Image 1 (cartoon, helix red, strand yellow):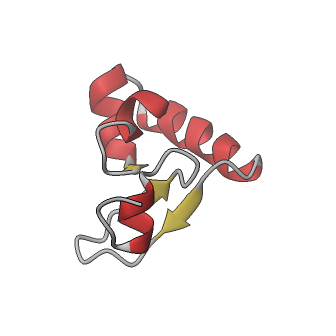
Image 2 (cartoon, rainbow, N blue to C red; image 1 turned 120 degrees about the vertical axis):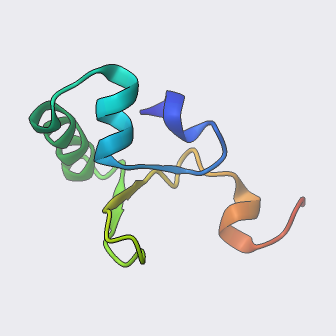
Length: 71
């Protein structure tokens, strides 16, 4: 999942994982759920498009979390 989140957005969707890795929906969901269970990801179901986002705070840039451009 690190490959996706390093693009600067800090999250992925099931659709992105399916498309970029050519995985089935079930495989993508299983992998993301495992990361949730391990405490490596958080979910966000509140986006206006209705797609669940799996956030990875450990790889999110600090500026996206605090709203500042640099420390």
